[in-house]
Length: 239
Length: 260
Image (tube, rainbow over all chains, first blue to last red):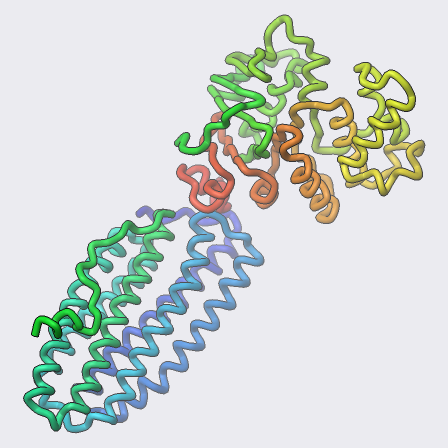
Protein backbone atom coordinates (compact mmCIF):
# COMPACT_ATOMS: atom_id res chain seq x y z
CA UNK A 1 0.00 0.00 0.00
CA UNK A 2 1.51 3.26 -1.09
CA UNK A 3 1.81 6.02 1.44
CA UNK A 4 -1.17 8.29 1.19
CA UNK A 5 -0.81 11.86 0.06
CA UNK A 6 -1.06 14.68 2.51
CA UNK A 7 -4.30 16.53 2.99
CA UNK A 8 -4.62 20.04 1.70
CA UNK A 9 -5.45 21.04 5.27
CA UNK A 10 -2.21 20.16 7.07
CA UNK A 11 -3.82 20.34 10.52
CA UNK A 12 -5.90 17.32 9.53
CA UNK A 13 -2.73 15.31 8.92
CA UNK A 14 -1.41 16.45 12.28
CA UNK A 15 -4.57 15.16 13.97
CA UNK A 16 -4.31 11.85 12.11
CA UNK A 17 -0.64 11.46 12.98
CA UNK A 18 -1.34 12.19 16.62
CA UNK A 19 -4.14 9.64 16.60
CA UNK A 20 -1.89 7.00 15.04
CA UNK A 21 0.84 7.82 17.54
CA UNK A 22 -1.51 7.40 20.49
CA UNK A 23 -2.77 4.06 19.19
CA UNK A 24 0.79 2.84 18.61
CA UNK A 25 1.74 3.84 22.12
CA UNK A 26 -1.33 2.15 23.55
CA UNK A 27 -0.62 -1.04 21.59
CA UNK A 28 3.00 -0.98 22.71
CA UNK A 29 1.91 -0.71 26.32
CA UNK A 30 -0.59 -3.55 26.00
CA UNK A 31 2.06 -5.76 24.42
CA UNK A 32 4.48 -4.82 27.19
CA UNK A 33 1.85 -5.61 29.84
CA UNK A 34 1.54 -9.10 28.40
CA UNK A 35 5.29 -9.70 28.23
CA UNK A 36 5.86 -8.37 31.76
CA UNK A 37 2.94 -10.31 33.21
CA UNK A 38 4.27 -13.54 31.75
CA UNK A 39 7.80 -12.76 32.95
CA UNK A 40 6.42 -12.07 36.42
CA UNK A 41 4.55 -15.37 36.25
CA UNK A 42 7.61 -17.33 35.20
CA UNK A 43 9.90 -15.73 37.76
CA UNK A 44 7.37 -15.24 40.55
CA UNK A 45 8.19 -11.55 40.49
CA UNK A 46 5.45 -9.94 42.58
CA UNK A 47 6.84 -6.44 42.16
CA UNK A 48 6.80 -6.69 38.37
CA UNK A 49 3.25 -8.10 38.53
CA UNK A 50 2.15 -5.18 40.68
CA UNK A 51 3.70 -2.78 38.19
CA UNK A 52 1.69 -4.33 35.32
CA UNK A 53 -1.48 -3.74 37.33
CA UNK A 54 -0.49 -0.11 37.99
CA UNK A 55 0.50 0.56 34.38
CA UNK A 56 -2.90 -0.54 33.12
CA UNK A 57 -4.28 2.82 34.21
CA UNK A 58 -2.11 4.47 31.57
CA UNK A 59 -3.64 2.25 28.88
CA UNK A 60 -7.11 3.25 30.03
CA UNK A 61 -6.11 6.92 29.93
CA UNK A 62 -4.80 6.52 26.37
CA UNK A 63 -8.08 4.96 25.33
CA UNK A 64 -9.97 7.96 26.67
CA UNK A 65 -7.58 10.31 24.88
CA UNK A 66 -8.03 8.51 21.54
CA UNK A 67 -11.81 8.57 21.94
CA UNK A 68 -11.77 12.28 22.61
CA UNK A 69 -9.47 13.03 19.68
CA UNK A 70 -11.51 10.84 17.33
CA UNK A 71 -14.81 12.47 18.25
CA UNK A 72 -13.21 15.88 17.89
CA UNK A 73 -11.74 15.05 14.49
CA UNK A 74 -15.03 13.67 13.19
CA UNK A 75 -16.80 16.81 14.37
CA UNK A 76 -14.27 19.31 13.07
CA UNK A 77 -12.86 17.69 9.94
CA UNK A 78 -15.81 15.66 8.64
CA UNK A 79 -13.52 12.87 7.42
CA UNK A 80 -14.57 10.88 4.35
CA UNK A 81 -13.80 7.51 2.79
CA UNK A 82 -10.61 5.89 4.15
CA UNK A 83 -10.18 8.72 6.66
CA UNK A 84 -13.67 8.07 7.99
CA UNK A 85 -13.06 4.34 8.11
CA UNK A 86 -9.86 5.01 10.04
CA UNK A 87 -11.73 7.09 12.64
CA UNK A 88 -14.32 4.38 13.21
CA UNK A 89 -11.64 1.69 13.29
CA UNK A 90 -9.57 3.75 15.74
CA UNK A 91 -12.49 3.84 18.17
CA UNK A 92 -13.01 0.10 17.91
CA UNK A 93 -9.31 -0.76 17.99
CA UNK A 94 -8.62 1.13 21.20
CA UNK A 95 -11.46 -0.59 22.99
CA UNK A 96 -9.96 -3.92 21.91
CA UNK A 97 -6.45 -2.87 22.96
CA UNK A 98 -7.86 -1.84 26.30
CA UNK A 99 -9.29 -5.35 26.66
CA UNK A 100 -5.90 -6.83 25.80
CA UNK A 101 -4.40 -4.67 28.55
CA UNK A 102 -7.00 -5.97 30.97
CA UNK A 103 -6.11 -9.57 30.19
CA UNK A 104 -2.45 -8.74 30.84
CA UNK A 105 -3.46 -7.23 34.16
CA UNK A 106 -5.57 -10.27 34.91
CA UNK A 107 -2.59 -12.57 34.35
CA UNK A 108 -0.41 -10.34 36.54
CA UNK A 109 -2.94 -10.51 39.36
CA UNK A 110 -2.76 -14.31 39.38
CA UNK A 111 1.02 -14.31 39.98
CA UNK A 112 0.54 -13.72 43.71
CA UNK A 113 -2.02 -16.54 43.89
CA UNK A 114 0.24 -19.29 42.59
CA UNK A 115 3.56 -18.92 44.24
CA UNK A 116 4.28 -22.65 44.33
CA UNK A 117 3.77 -23.57 40.72
CA UNK A 118 7.01 -22.78 38.93
CA UNK A 119 7.67 -26.45 38.37
CA UNK A 120 4.51 -27.14 36.44
CA UNK A 121 5.53 -28.33 33.01
CA UNK A 122 2.91 -26.27 31.20
CA UNK A 123 4.69 -23.01 31.99
CA UNK A 124 7.31 -23.17 29.22
CA UNK A 125 4.53 -23.92 26.74
CA UNK A 126 2.53 -20.98 28.07
CA UNK A 127 5.60 -18.81 27.53
CA UNK A 128 5.85 -19.95 23.93
CA UNK A 129 2.15 -19.27 23.46
CA UNK A 130 2.47 -15.81 24.96
CA UNK A 131 5.39 -15.01 22.64
CA UNK A 132 3.19 -15.75 19.64
CA UNK A 133 0.32 -13.72 21.08
CA UNK A 134 2.66 -10.77 21.72
CA UNK A 135 3.85 -11.00 18.11
CA UNK A 136 0.26 -11.05 16.86
CA UNK A 137 -0.61 -7.96 18.89
CA UNK A 138 2.55 -6.28 17.65
CA UNK A 139 1.91 -7.17 14.02
CA UNK A 140 -1.78 -6.24 14.19
CA UNK A 141 -0.85 -2.75 15.38
CA UNK A 142 2.00 -2.54 12.86
CA UNK A 143 -0.49 -3.38 10.12
CA UNK A 144 -2.62 -0.46 11.34
CA UNK A 145 0.32 1.93 11.40
CA UNK A 146 1.51 0.83 7.95
CA UNK A 147 -1.96 0.39 6.37
CA UNK A 148 -0.85 -3.12 5.48
CA UNK A 149 -3.82 -5.35 4.61
CA UNK A 150 -1.59 -8.34 3.78
CA UNK A 151 0.05 -8.25 7.19
CA UNK A 152 -3.43 -8.03 8.72
CA UNK A 153 -4.50 -11.16 6.87
CA UNK A 154 -1.39 -13.00 8.07
CA UNK A 155 -2.27 -12.09 11.67
CA UNK A 156 -5.68 -13.70 11.38
CA UNK A 157 -4.16 -16.82 9.82
CA UNK A 158 -1.53 -17.11 12.56
CA UNK A 159 -4.16 -16.88 15.29
CA UNK A 160 -4.87 -20.52 14.46
CA UNK A 161 -1.50 -21.39 16.09
CA UNK A 162 -2.63 -19.71 19.30
CA UNK A 163 -5.81 -21.76 19.31
CA UNK A 164 -3.77 -24.95 18.78
CA UNK A 165 -1.54 -23.98 21.70
CA UNK A 166 -4.56 -23.40 23.86
CA UNK A 167 -6.08 -26.78 23.09
CA UNK A 168 -2.76 -28.47 23.73
CA UNK A 169 -2.20 -26.66 27.04
CA UNK A 170 -5.73 -27.47 28.12
CA UNK A 171 -5.08 -31.16 27.63
CA UNK A 172 -1.70 -30.97 29.34
CA UNK A 173 -3.10 -29.19 32.37
CA UNK A 174 -6.08 -31.50 32.75
CA UNK A 175 -3.77 -34.50 32.67
CA UNK A 176 -1.43 -32.79 35.12
CA UNK A 177 -4.30 -32.09 37.52
CA UNK A 178 -5.39 -35.71 37.46
CA UNK A 179 -1.88 -36.84 38.27
CA UNK A 180 -1.13 -34.10 40.81
CA UNK A 181 -4.32 -33.29 42.72
CA UNK A 182 -2.48 -30.99 45.12
CA UNK A 183 -1.74 -28.60 42.25
CA UNK A 184 -5.35 -28.32 41.11
CA UNK A 185 -5.73 -24.76 42.30
CA UNK A 186 -2.53 -23.57 40.59
CA UNK A 187 -3.36 -25.50 37.44
CA UNK A 188 -6.79 -23.90 37.33
CA UNK A 189 -5.12 -20.50 37.46
CA UNK A 190 -2.85 -21.49 34.61
CA UNK A 191 -5.89 -22.61 32.62
CA UNK A 192 -7.29 -19.13 33.02
CA UNK A 193 -3.97 -17.66 31.94
CA UNK A 194 -4.06 -19.82 28.82
CA UNK A 195 -7.63 -18.76 28.18
CA UNK A 196 -6.65 -15.10 28.56
CA UNK A 197 -3.83 -15.58 26.07
CA UNK A 198 -6.20 -17.24 23.66
CA UNK A 199 -8.62 -14.31 23.97
CA UNK A 200 -5.79 -11.84 23.39
CA UNK A 201 -5.00 -13.65 20.16
CA UNK A 202 -8.64 -13.30 19.12
CA UNK A 203 -8.49 -9.60 19.89
CA UNK A 204 -5.36 -9.22 17.77
CA UNK A 205 -7.38 -10.88 15.02
CA UNK A 206 -10.19 -8.36 15.56
CA UNK A 207 -7.73 -5.52 15.16
CA UNK A 208 -6.38 -7.10 11.98
CA UNK A 209 -9.91 -7.39 10.59
CA UNK A 210 -10.54 -3.70 11.26
CA UNK A 211 -7.24 -2.77 9.62
CA UNK A 212 -8.27 -4.77 6.58
CA UNK A 213 -11.51 -2.81 6.47
CA UNK A 214 -9.72 0.53 6.81
CA UNK A 215 -7.31 -0.27 4.00
CA UNK A 216 -9.61 -1.99 1.53
CA UNK A 217 -13.09 -0.79 2.44
CA UNK A 218 -14.18 -4.43 2.38
CA UNK A 219 -14.73 -6.84 5.22
CA UNK A 220 -12.28 -9.69 5.42
CA UNK A 221 -13.70 -12.89 4.05
CA UNK A 222 -14.60 -15.65 6.44
CA UNK A 223 -11.17 -16.78 7.34
CA UNK A 224 -9.82 -20.25 7.71
CA UNK A 225 -9.82 -20.50 11.43
CA UNK A 226 -9.98 -24.18 12.09
CA UNK A 227 -12.10 -25.26 15.03
CA UNK A 228 -12.99 -22.73 17.67
CA UNK A 229 -11.51 -23.74 20.98
CA UNK A 230 -14.34 -24.44 23.36
CA UNK A 231 -12.39 -24.92 26.52
CA UNK A 232 -11.15 -28.17 25.12
CA UNK A 233 -14.62 -29.67 25.37
CA UNK A 234 -14.16 -31.76 22.26
CA UNK A 235 -10.81 -33.09 23.40
CA UNK A 236 -12.22 -33.88 26.79
CA UNK A 237 -14.93 -36.06 25.31
CA UNK A 238 -12.39 -37.96 23.26
CA UNK A 239 -10.16 -38.45 26.30
CA UNK B 1 -16.84 1.93 -13.01
CA UNK B 2 -19.10 -0.83 -11.80
CA UNK B 3 -22.73 -0.99 -12.76
CA UNK B 4 -23.88 -3.29 -9.96
CA UNK B 5 -27.27 -2.18 -8.71
CA UNK B 6 -26.70 1.18 -10.32
CA UNK B 7 -28.94 0.69 -13.30
CA UNK B 8 -31.90 3.04 -13.26
CA UNK B 9 -34.91 1.11 -14.50
CA UNK B 10 -36.74 3.97 -16.16
CA UNK B 11 -34.34 6.87 -16.59
CA UNK B 12 -35.89 10.28 -17.04
CA UNK B 13 -32.77 11.52 -18.77
CA UNK B 14 -30.05 9.49 -20.41
CA UNK B 15 -26.72 10.83 -21.59
CA UNK B 16 -24.57 8.67 -23.80
CA UNK B 17 -21.04 9.41 -24.99
CA UNK B 18 -21.45 13.13 -24.50
CA UNK B 19 -18.63 15.49 -25.48
CA UNK B 20 -18.78 19.24 -25.03
CA UNK B 21 -16.36 21.59 -26.75
CA UNK B 22 -15.79 25.29 -26.25
CA UNK B 23 -14.12 26.13 -29.56
CA UNK B 24 -11.09 23.83 -29.76
CA UNK B 25 -11.10 23.04 -26.10
CA UNK B 26 -12.83 19.88 -25.01
CA UNK B 27 -14.60 20.46 -21.69
CA UNK B 28 -16.46 17.15 -21.43
CA UNK B 29 -15.09 13.86 -22.65
CA UNK B 30 -17.33 10.87 -23.37
CA UNK B 31 -19.70 11.10 -20.42
CA UNK B 32 -22.56 8.64 -20.07
CA UNK B 33 -25.00 8.78 -17.18
CA UNK B 34 -28.66 8.11 -16.42
CA UNK B 35 -30.82 10.31 -14.23
CA UNK B 36 -33.94 8.95 -12.52
CA UNK B 37 -36.93 10.58 -10.90
CA UNK B 38 -36.72 8.69 -7.63
CA UNK B 39 -33.14 9.60 -6.97
CA UNK B 40 -31.30 12.85 -6.42
CA UNK B 41 -28.07 12.85 -8.40
CA UNK B 42 -25.16 14.99 -7.23
CA UNK B 43 -22.28 16.06 -9.47
CA UNK B 44 -19.11 16.81 -7.56
CA UNK B 45 -15.57 17.67 -8.58
CA UNK B 46 -12.99 20.43 -8.42
CA UNK B 47 -13.50 23.75 -10.18
CA UNK B 48 -13.18 23.44 -13.92
CA UNK B 49 -13.87 19.69 -13.93
CA UNK B 50 -16.83 20.12 -16.27
CA UNK B 51 -19.67 19.31 -13.91
CA UNK B 52 -21.50 22.59 -14.52
CA UNK B 53 -20.84 22.39 -18.26
CA UNK B 54 -22.33 18.93 -18.32
CA UNK B 55 -25.30 20.03 -16.22
CA UNK B 56 -25.96 22.87 -18.64
CA UNK B 57 -25.88 20.52 -21.58
CA UNK B 58 -28.87 18.71 -20.06
CA UNK B 59 -31.24 21.55 -20.92
CA UNK B 60 -29.20 23.10 -23.71
CA UNK B 61 -28.13 26.11 -21.70
CA UNK B 62 -24.83 25.81 -23.57
CA UNK B 63 -26.68 26.88 -26.71
CA UNK B 64 -26.30 30.42 -25.42
CA UNK B 65 -22.50 30.09 -25.67
CA UNK B 66 -21.63 30.64 -29.33
CA UNK B 67 -18.48 28.49 -29.35
CA UNK B 68 -20.05 25.58 -27.49
CA UNK B 69 -20.63 22.34 -29.36
CA UNK B 70 -22.23 19.21 -27.94
CA UNK B 71 -21.83 15.75 -29.49
CA UNK B 72 -23.14 12.41 -28.33
CA UNK B 73 -26.70 11.75 -27.27
CA UNK B 74 -28.82 13.25 -24.50
CA UNK B 75 -32.38 11.98 -24.21
CA UNK B 76 -35.36 13.13 -22.20
CA UNK B 77 -37.92 10.33 -22.00
CA UNK B 78 -36.15 8.70 -24.92
CA UNK B 79 -36.33 11.82 -27.06
CA UNK B 80 -33.08 13.38 -28.34
CA UNK B 81 -33.00 16.88 -26.88
CA UNK B 82 -30.51 18.05 -29.51
CA UNK B 83 -32.75 16.91 -32.39
CA UNK B 84 -33.74 19.73 -34.76
CA UNK B 85 -37.39 19.12 -33.94
CA UNK B 86 -36.84 19.82 -30.24
CA UNK B 87 -38.44 23.07 -29.06
CA UNK B 88 -35.77 24.53 -26.79
CA UNK B 89 -38.16 26.79 -24.89
CA UNK B 90 -40.38 23.81 -24.20
CA UNK B 91 -37.34 21.74 -23.24
CA UNK B 92 -36.26 24.29 -20.64
CA UNK B 93 -39.76 24.28 -19.18
CA UNK B 94 -39.53 20.50 -18.84
CA UNK B 95 -35.94 20.66 -17.58
CA UNK B 96 -35.86 23.61 -15.20
CA UNK B 97 -32.81 25.19 -13.68
CA UNK B 98 -31.85 26.88 -10.43
CA UNK B 99 -28.63 28.87 -10.39
CA UNK B 100 -25.89 29.60 -7.90
CA UNK B 101 -27.00 33.13 -7.16
CA UNK B 102 -30.72 33.66 -6.67
CA UNK B 103 -31.91 35.60 -9.70
CA UNK B 104 -35.53 36.60 -9.21
CA UNK B 105 -37.04 38.88 -11.85
CA UNK B 106 -37.36 42.48 -10.64
CA UNK B 107 -41.05 41.89 -10.32
CA UNK B 108 -43.49 40.89 -7.61
CA UNK B 109 -43.25 37.55 -5.87
CA UNK B 110 -46.50 36.56 -7.56
CA UNK B 111 -45.27 37.51 -11.03
CA UNK B 112 -41.95 35.73 -10.52
CA UNK B 113 -43.81 32.47 -10.04
CA UNK B 114 -46.74 33.20 -12.38
CA UNK B 115 -44.70 34.34 -15.38
CA UNK B 116 -43.73 30.89 -16.61
CA UNK B 117 -47.15 29.26 -16.32
CA UNK B 118 -48.69 32.27 -18.05
CA UNK B 119 -46.41 32.29 -21.09
CA UNK B 120 -46.61 28.51 -21.37
CA UNK B 121 -50.38 28.71 -21.26
CA UNK B 122 -50.66 26.56 -18.16
CA UNK B 123 -53.11 28.91 -16.43
CA UNK B 124 -55.86 30.28 -18.66
CA UNK B 125 -57.56 32.37 -15.98
CA UNK B 126 -56.48 34.51 -13.06
CA UNK B 127 -58.06 32.00 -10.70
CA UNK B 128 -56.09 29.16 -12.30
CA UNK B 129 -52.90 31.17 -12.01
CA UNK B 130 -53.58 31.87 -8.32
CA UNK B 131 -53.79 28.13 -7.75
CA UNK B 132 -50.61 27.41 -9.70
CA UNK B 133 -48.67 30.16 -7.89
CA UNK B 134 -49.82 29.05 -4.48
CA UNK B 135 -49.05 25.40 -5.16
CA UNK B 136 -45.54 26.22 -6.39
CA UNK B 137 -44.84 28.44 -3.38
CA UNK B 138 -46.16 25.78 -1.01
CA UNK B 139 -43.99 23.12 -2.63
CA UNK B 140 -40.99 25.41 -2.41
CA UNK B 141 -41.67 25.88 1.30
CA UNK B 142 -42.08 29.61 0.90
CA UNK B 143 -45.85 30.08 1.00
CA UNK B 144 -46.24 30.75 4.73
CA UNK B 145 -43.52 33.37 4.63
CA UNK B 146 -44.85 35.33 1.64
CA UNK B 147 -48.58 34.69 1.40
CA UNK B 148 -49.40 38.12 2.83
CA UNK B 149 -47.04 40.02 0.58
CA UNK B 150 -47.28 38.37 -2.80
CA UNK B 151 -47.17 41.72 -4.55
CA UNK B 152 -43.96 42.90 -2.99
CA UNK B 153 -40.84 42.68 -5.11
CA UNK B 154 -39.09 39.31 -5.24
CA UNK B 155 -35.78 41.06 -4.85
CA UNK B 156 -36.83 42.34 -1.41
CA UNK B 157 -36.70 38.81 0.02
CA UNK B 158 -33.70 37.43 1.87
CA UNK B 159 -31.14 35.41 -0.11
CA UNK B 160 -32.51 32.10 1.07
CA UNK B 161 -36.09 33.15 0.35
CA UNK B 162 -35.05 34.39 -3.10
CA UNK B 163 -33.50 31.02 -3.86
CA UNK B 164 -36.67 29.22 -2.78
CA UNK B 165 -38.60 31.71 -4.93
CA UNK B 166 -36.43 30.66 -7.88
CA UNK B 167 -37.17 27.02 -7.08
CA UNK B 168 -40.90 27.89 -6.91
CA UNK B 169 -40.52 29.60 -10.29
CA UNK B 170 -38.92 26.47 -11.73
CA UNK B 171 -41.59 24.23 -10.21
CA UNK B 172 -44.48 26.44 -11.40
CA UNK B 173 -44.20 25.27 -15.00
CA UNK B 174 -44.48 21.68 -13.84
CA UNK B 175 -41.05 20.48 -14.99
CA UNK B 176 -39.91 16.87 -15.09
CA UNK B 177 -36.30 17.57 -14.22
CA UNK B 178 -34.77 20.27 -12.02
CA UNK B 179 -31.10 21.10 -12.48
CA UNK B 180 -29.47 22.94 -9.60
CA UNK B 181 -26.11 24.58 -10.09
CA UNK B 182 -24.64 25.15 -6.62
CA UNK B 183 -28.00 26.38 -5.31
CA UNK B 184 -26.77 26.99 -1.76
CA UNK B 185 -23.33 28.46 -2.25
CA UNK B 186 -24.59 32.00 -1.62
CA UNK B 187 -26.76 31.04 1.35
CA UNK B 188 -26.27 30.84 5.11
CA UNK B 189 -26.51 27.47 6.91
CA UNK B 190 -30.17 27.85 7.89
CA UNK B 191 -31.25 28.83 4.38
CA UNK B 192 -29.08 25.99 3.08
CA UNK B 193 -30.80 23.51 5.39
CA UNK B 194 -34.19 24.69 4.12
CA UNK B 195 -33.15 24.16 0.52
CA UNK B 196 -31.80 20.72 1.37
CA UNK B 197 -35.05 19.85 3.12
CA UNK B 198 -36.86 21.08 0.03
CA UNK B 199 -34.74 18.88 -2.23
CA UNK B 200 -35.68 15.98 0.01
CA UNK B 201 -39.38 16.89 -0.30
CA UNK B 202 -39.20 17.24 -4.07
CA UNK B 203 -37.45 13.94 -4.60
CA UNK B 204 -39.74 11.53 -6.39
CA UNK B 205 -41.82 14.32 -7.94
CA UNK B 206 -39.01 15.57 -10.14
CA UNK B 207 -35.70 14.18 -11.28
CA UNK B 208 -33.18 16.36 -9.48
CA UNK B 209 -29.57 16.89 -10.43
CA UNK B 210 -27.46 19.08 -8.18
CA UNK B 211 -23.97 20.41 -8.74
CA UNK B 212 -22.28 21.24 -5.47
CA UNK B 213 -18.85 22.09 -4.16
CA UNK B 214 -19.97 21.16 -0.69
CA UNK B 215 -19.35 17.46 -0.37
CA UNK B 216 -21.25 17.22 2.87
CA UNK B 217 -24.21 18.62 0.98
CA UNK B 218 -23.83 16.04 -1.79
CA UNK B 219 -23.69 13.38 0.90
CA UNK B 220 -26.76 14.75 2.63
CA UNK B 221 -29.12 15.33 -0.30
CA UNK B 222 -28.25 12.78 -2.96
CA UNK B 223 -28.63 9.06 -3.45
CA UNK B 224 -26.28 8.91 -6.42
CA UNK B 225 -23.04 10.80 -6.81
CA UNK B 226 -20.96 11.39 -9.91
CA UNK B 227 -17.38 12.57 -9.54
CA UNK B 228 -16.01 14.60 -12.44
CA UNK B 229 -12.38 15.41 -13.02
CA UNK B 230 -10.76 17.06 -16.03
CA UNK B 231 -13.89 16.68 -18.11
CA UNK B 232 -14.35 12.97 -17.51
CA UNK B 233 -16.76 11.09 -15.31
CA UNK B 234 -14.30 9.36 -13.00
CA UNK B 235 -16.76 7.52 -10.81
CA UNK B 236 -20.50 7.18 -10.51
CA UNK B 237 -22.13 5.28 -7.69
CA UNK B 238 -24.39 5.17 -4.71
CA UNK B 239 -23.69 8.20 -2.56
CA UNK B 240 -23.01 6.02 0.50
CA UNK B 241 -20.41 4.03 -1.43
CA UNK B 242 -18.73 7.09 -2.91
CA UNK B 243 -18.31 8.66 0.50
CA UNK B 244 -17.36 5.59 2.51
CA UNK B 245 -15.53 3.47 -0.01
CA UNK B 246 -14.80 5.08 -3.38
CA UNK B 247 -13.31 2.72 -5.94
CA UNK B 248 -11.15 5.24 -7.77
CA UNK B 249 -8.03 6.76 -6.25
CA UNK B 250 -8.85 10.17 -7.73
CA UNK B 251 -12.30 10.16 -6.14
CA UNK B 252 -10.82 9.22 -2.79
CA UNK B 253 -8.17 11.93 -2.96
CA UNK B 254 -10.81 14.50 -3.79
CA UNK B 255 -13.41 13.66 -1.18
CA UNK B 256 -10.86 13.20 1.59
CA UNK B 257 -9.33 16.58 0.83
CA UNK B 258 -6.07 15.30 -0.62
CA UNK B 259 -6.61 16.58 -4.14
CA UNK B 260 -4.17 19.06 -5.59
